[in-house]
Image (cartoon, rainbow over all chains, first blue to last red; front, top):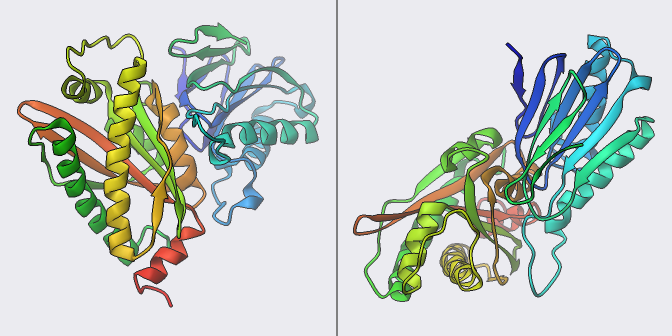
Length: 162
Length: 203
């Protein structure tokens, strides 16, 4: 039986092939998928906020883009992945609500989460090979350790692999 | 201490109780019929438990969101499952016909936003009375999508403070119809000391 591992909010996990990592209902949060295709090891983080140093209460590393990515890379290396071989895919970072009459900085947190994820990955020299971010709708994602495929399901905005 | 402890929590519970009472009265006026209410239930849950109260992260729900400004600032989200939203709309719109596969029409969205506005005003009014602080709500925005995605908006706000979410489950009853909603009122991080000061908890 194929192992299906659920990743909660402010959570991260890793699997080896043929495992599948799943996170449900990403809104402004971002799902960061990392994959080493040679050893078929996959990692998925579901982050809520951009940078840990902007927040006083930052013990939970999986909550922030910067610390979650570092932790995920470390966990994958411990399983046998190589940092140079890692490739990243991103999903989520939506703006769920929009005011007709004005902009809201609070509501742009999804965009800031995507930027922080990209910046952190770039610092670690991990290439981002695909991205399905932004918009105003939720996404459920599944990452397949066998192929590195990242399945994105929405309500009313289609289903696709990236 | 965390923000959700002790006197602050007791105060917010009281704000929730009074707010829900005012909300039921306002709803009765809007619907022109008597709306009863269960005693509001205060929930304190970890982020991953919150979705269970609305039936799971992928359940379709309606969310009404607004922000408030004034002496303190923050956000409000009222989240309703589809059945509850349909029950509400049946009262508000003559000949309302349920089509749960689709989103809401312009007039339905507008009716739901108005309800969000009324509830938010009731809770904010209660908060003002309790703390003596003045607050003003924005125009509400509406979304209809996966519960997890809509909940990410208030949970991210809570995520800046700690690991738990605090909200009020409110059930309005009209005959056999129930309107079950969950109400999140989240002051921003800089507003907590102001609220605590107004309550006499800190000098």
